[in-house]
Image 1: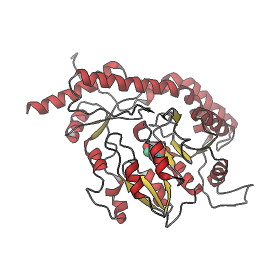
Image 2: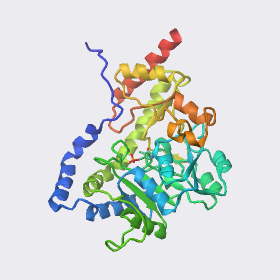
Image 3: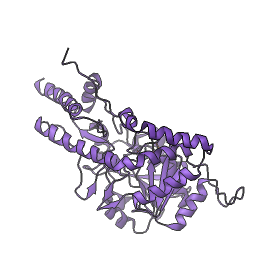
Image 4: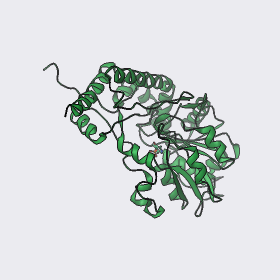
Length: 378
Ligand SMILES: *Cc1c(COP(=O)(O)O)cnc(C)c1O
């Protein structure tokens, strides 16, 4: 039948890979022929290209976004007894990295509109033990960095920019706004590797040196150890692949932003915007839409409906940190952070990837419309 519903995936990595296949395979072949698999010239090359792309002095390639956070915190000497403030609503690694070092994650609620750390709540969470602050640029939109840096007044700020490569705040790219920026090249991020990889950025020469040292067991020269670090090294294969993909990032981001505008128009035209809330994009920030997150009253019902229609969707995130079993020791309870709890209940990410077509977006919006109108009719 001609009106058979064809699904839309949440992310289609094949569509991005297809036109780059020959270049990527050539880059992989180059690494295979060199038989140099860890660090080396591909990784150094990527670091230079990333530093210039992100407008930072130093870029340190690492093994994952999680390790980027861990390494940044280690370079700041975060340890047991220290407090590090993070939003309660993010991917687990943001608070996990703090806890892994024996420090205490001090959680704060997010802004109701942007899902990002609320600077006023941050101010109330700072104590004499606060050693770092980790704002997250969630879904690809920068946190309120000016207010956060003001409130921090000298306490190091580590940007969790894992979802925000290429985003900017008041025309300044994220990653160079605080002491450190932490990026992830997990395959579903806007710039994805073919496995795990990440990046730490800083404008501080001393911190850059320390991060580089900690990345390889604090070793310099070989087998002489100044600090207890870890293995946070990046694979040459990942660096070579990322170097092929990086020049395309600006174009991919432009497509994601165009898709976001198109959704806003389509939802508006379908008369849905009073019942389906669009993401709030602050005018002073360049949102890169790693995710396009809508908000609806009966989110779980909509999710079931989209699942049945083959429309990719995901809940980012169903449980804020303060309600996670592993953080029960922090002593929080339901109701402590109402904005995050509401977001966990009513938000849903829909497909936004660069290669998404107009007709796929119409399919998504029609599926949402069918659900919303059915509910009204009941
Ligand atoms: C993806 C992500 C991370 C972790 O990155 P990995 O590369 O998966 O380790 C950290 N923080 C946020 C907000 C993320 O989205």
